[in-house]
Image 1 (tube, rainbow, N blue to C red):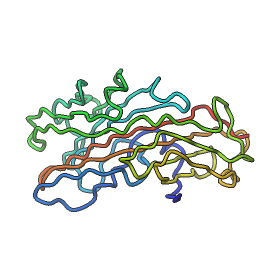
Image 2 (image 1 turned 60 degrees about the horizontal axis):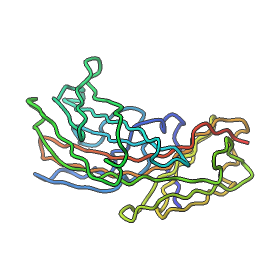
Image 3 (image 1 turned 30 degrees about the vertical axis):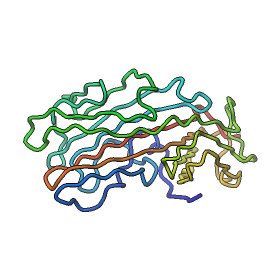
Image 4 (image 1 turned 45 degrees about the vertical axis):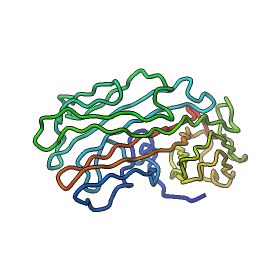
Length: 249
């Protein structure tokens, strides 16, 4: 198990990591890989030399798997670091248009989990924008995590007990990403093997204040980047499971 780095609590709330595709562009290229760290950006941003980022995110709850899954689709297209309306974006059957107030794209669609999780989804852009050419591509989405924990349906994270997690491993993934954040102290962020089981020893919670609210997440993701010297697009698919409403005891 490898510790990554500590971030403030709210960095876990939403958004995603785009560090996986930092190489210089070849004249044309395409790359697909797992995310190389836990999602860490507060808001929709691009990093490196990418001109656009598209997020396809699915949210589960511990102990419930894909039964009550929700989705967030979002994107931002930048021209000289300014968000622009690049045209009509499609993710599967969902149509996204830029919001007039921010020029960012975001929707919370009602979805059937089985149509996305463990499948490939088509993403396309219909555009007459000078900076963004139309495209169509497919991206992979990880299967549901189906996380179970030693907390079960309880409301408390006990400082004097190890935390045991199990989930459905994905043989196509090497890593999963763990985040445990309590108010007032640094988060625990770890990259862990996607082998379906993990024990977090009680010593990790030594600095967690009794009574503090806790966010507990386990996730995994894939990022695909493609483009040329004029345009680079990165699409991130992320499956994130959380244990809501916990308190330190």
